[in-house]
Image (cartoon, rainbow, N blue to C red; front, side):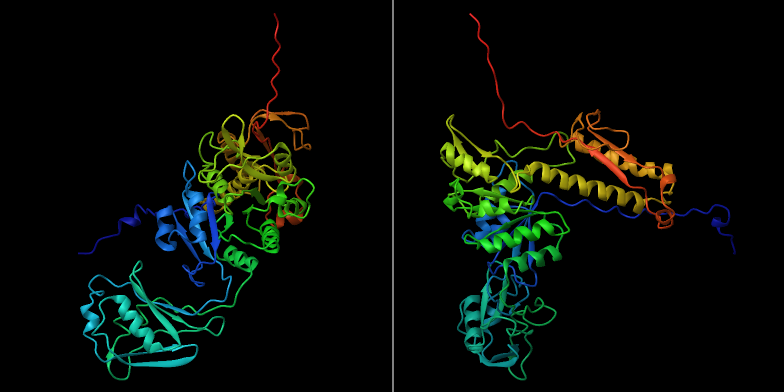
Length: 493
């Protein structure tokens, strides 16, 4: 029986809007170190707690020391990345499949009395034969037996934490290479038993030459935009490395912040101009901050941990770093002269006061800007950028190049500035900047901000044909924070 389609009478279509672009996370720290836990291909790994870091790095690695200070803050930050710096040349590595409990049964291996496999290391095919595993008592013994057969070409180990076998070349650098393992021409195949074959093992990782810290940071900046703060987990960084990274972080296109702890007591000397704090101040870096700490080379990780708990989408959530604590860091006992020397060099410190308290002071970047203002304005820039992009991207129809259309953009920016007022970054106050639209210098910003766009009628024909919006300007008043107070008490009797 033939029937007519209902759509001939009522035609209904479902149109899904594109998923909006997400804002960046301004609470994500990258801890960059040279421990060989993360290989040079994986390069970066995410953690949400200290437990995950301990599981991978143990408790003696520099990455753990920095992560511990970061996660020890209260409230606790949520995201940390660990990155790999090839400070020295690395070796080629083949990571086997994760073996199940059944696959790890030692009986699977002791049944092999004449095993074999093939693997190419450093360009040379190694044919392993007569592998006798009948006498091994554990998987470490299996790995040792394979190492013996590899001779000087490489080493095989059993990683009990990750439940896999790994084969590492004995050489380092660009010529250090490795392949998947393969079945032998004769004998019992152990390559699949160890999970080292293609389809089971991870992609082979070839060695690389040693890289500078700057190269490592630049590489990780190119790989991921997810991290915002940078903490290098190395107790003996060269000053040239610190300065080169500070310069890179300052100029790179994606906003980031670099923290460095100095333990050189010259920072306490007001006459010194050659210490790293003085050099970074001279560089006028607004995206790098320093801290003096005799207790830990990673004290800045604690500052990151406290600052990165701020949720900019909340109400009254912004903070100033001054007066905050650093769990796990011993406070410094300084003279007035030493404290003033650090302040003059824009170098932060966790210091004891004579009322049995200890606080972070002053919470500034190397150029003297306050950390919370740089952090907050980075968020606001990205929040406005993402909101305007999503307005243009997710709308089912176009934003017209008309005054009502431009007003939609202005209204969107207004909404994000409202959030900046709500979280405490901005507040009503007197505008002392240049004239913007209808706002003149000295005028009071009742909302804490003002957004202005010229009429589209004033656009040049070229800009109109290029479909550009008129320049949109905003004046915002920062809420600031009280760091000092003078109190006068008049007494009468």
